[in-house]
Length: 187
Picture (cartoon, rainbow, N blue to C red):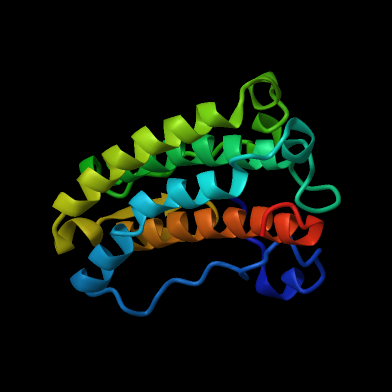
């Protein structure tokens, strides 16, 4: 996910950053970290509740003019989370590795985003989040202090990486939720 300077966010479509830019929490206590980790199992359930029952036309609707379709957002979350999981594990097993990036805007145009049902990515997310959750629950406070290097945020702790990942899910879920509300489809 590319970071947008906060001064530019006001110039964007209101649905592009419905929950605002990422800001790391000030509380980095182990208890706060575990509380954040406990959010992981709820992410797919919430996403599934948003997209269940939508027809093909609704799934093909962009969440904002010029934005991704709901289908693309769901598939993007699966791709992003696979990458995030691997970056996180590298942070646990290497000394301050450079987190790999990918061209998400180009991935969203690949044929799998168009052809595969969202249920495919929801299932992938469910299994991946289960693995990630088990890992997160077993880490020590020192593990969460380990770092990775990112092109966008610079050197960050694994706690911050977890926060950023959770924010990313809330961000995209809010985009979908705003569209559902605007169109009066489900909410």
